[in-house]
Image (cartoon, rainbow, N blue to C red; front, side, top):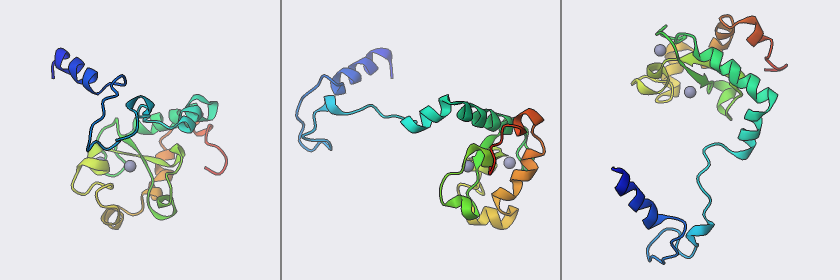
Length: 149
Ligand SMILES: [Zn+2]
Ligand SMILES: [Zn+2]
């Protein structure tokens, strides 16, 4: 879409439009009241700005530098948050991540996010790679791991 076309679309659906449209999903709700989509929650954003959050992100960045822990494909890898066993209940912290290539992570037919169970049958639980992941990380990164993580 060209510059001009995009500007036109913004004007047609933008915040200033109070046009009533029947059949529109948010009918009755003024468009001006809609808040923009926030990709990261406020809580998450605050955590990221904190010292603890910065350490956690540095940890994940270090994880990503390593080759895929499953197929050894060269990094940068994705930092996959473990999902097997008790880690499946809710998203664990960044300290429970392992390096996976895009293929083993999301893109391949046998990627962990396409078949959690079959991946586990083939490779074992993802959390069993946490120790191996940490063995590759520099001491200054390991020193930031909070107690209990
Ligand atoms: Zn891989
Ligand atoms: Zn993942």
